[in-house]
Length: 302
Image (cartoon, rainbow, N blue to C red; front, side):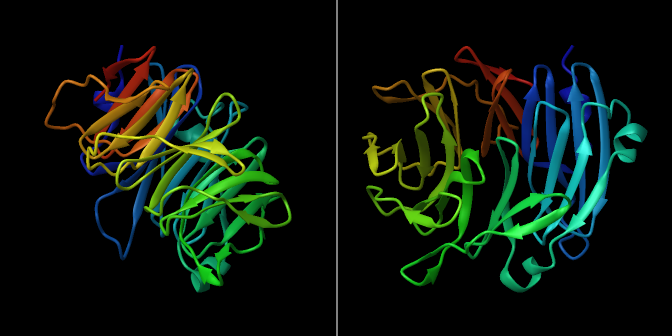
């Protein structure tokens, strides 16, 4: 049974999601469009069962979770909600597990944009190169990323821990953090970079504007040639040897030789932005649309 058609309420809009375990999908949604008084809903979809909680006062921008049962939802103004998705099998149980934390430094610096579990570490980053490690109920500021003395906007991050991860920026830069300092990456091209994922072999894949797909690590990067498809890539994820990239009109797949459109039947409700890999495959999560790529095939969920 597919529960997704009944999961979303009329004003729910998916911002991001996660797949921490087989048959478990977390959806982080904003509710409505009142930016002065933002409201959000987080849904835990487990097989045919659904549990949810709401929180307000900050607009949800990112969500992630680990297989052990702890999930995190991030608001752009520094709100962090932790919850127990494993024990939260009902709305009441999920609500009882909530803990809310605040990062007051964000108000002065600028909005946060992304949260990721990097191994056992919870790291979030934002719009003026700021990054934080969340541990023990507190935010510890990491060194602020600047390039040639200028602030940069971190769009996404990926890695194995808080002392070994990389970020990409809308300014066209990538940088690696080694636990003490940032190191700017020597990337080909200068297009805006929007999304990054870690590949199974330890390298990284980066997607960005103007058909940008970069693959590599450290200072060894390959720019994948395209046929000038005039696409901006907003989401990226990998399954096995395949890399998937989401653009406004669909999803492309890279098999190590060329980029090709993934076969997806046209539907009025299709939206493509976020791609997240997990035990079930690669999930496409955006707006009112949910899809799953498993074994190279697309399945519509809603």
